Amino acid sequence: MNFNIGFVGAGRVGISLGKYFSINNLNLSGYYSKNANSAATAAEFTESNYFNDLKSLLEYSNLIFITTPDDVIKEIWNELKEYNIKDKIICHASGSLSSSIFSNINTLGAFGYSIHPMCAFSDKFNTYKSLNQICFSIEGDERYLQTLNNFLQKLGNKVITLDKDKKPLYHLANVTVSNLVLSLLEIGCGYLLSCGISKEEAINALMPLIENNINNIKNNGFLASLTGPIERGDLETVKHHLGVIPASDLELYKRLSLNLACLSEKKHTEKDYNMLKNELHD
Image (tube, rainbow, N blue to C red; front, top):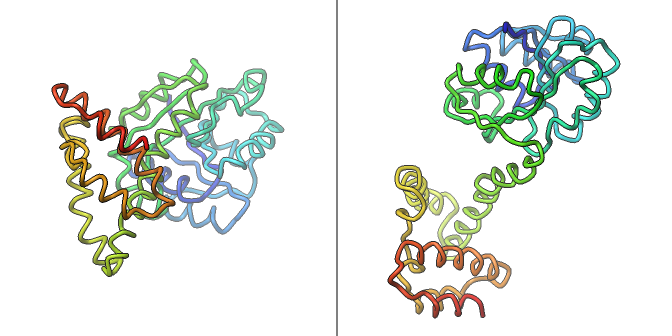
């Protein structure tokens, strides 16, 4: 199927995906945004067009990506329903919402999907450069599910297919390993700041440790990458940590350390971690 791809929304996700598609020689019809300047900027960057209204975008597009904030997707869908969308493929790029947000889409002769790029879009003019490395998730109408799957795989991306009722849990997985890890790293850097080390020094000092840990997990898996006092069973070290950790972080430390203890038990079935776990349960 030959796609003419239109975007509703010209922020970081829409611009990045559009640029990624365009450099892979896919046909972009262009952008519509309630902010006309944003649509014009996106069109220029992706060498496509911009439209002043949804109706015009629909006329030139058969695959429409809604790349607005999640809270706006339903509003855009209600506007789209006012036009002839027969045979159109309508997608949104939300990680948490499913294709069910396109209520009654089958009665309108169109086909709805959620296609989520598993990526942190931090820079709308540069993130596209790394999109060839990411995985997409997809769920939606059976009619074009495999077609869209093939469309993404031909770009060189891996694709996972989801059940629509699993989208919230799926999104929790993404947030946990991305946004929550960012928060955890910032907390860890804060401990070095309390040692009198500057933020820049802290980040530079910790970054090799962070990167090596990620690479070990990638290459060897979770169990083989375990290191540190929990795996070793260093009860006294853990007690020292518990003695200096800020009260606001205590439960976080205990919860994460208990999980490490459970993983360590799987790796070292001959070792007894009960004393360590009891200390963390107190």
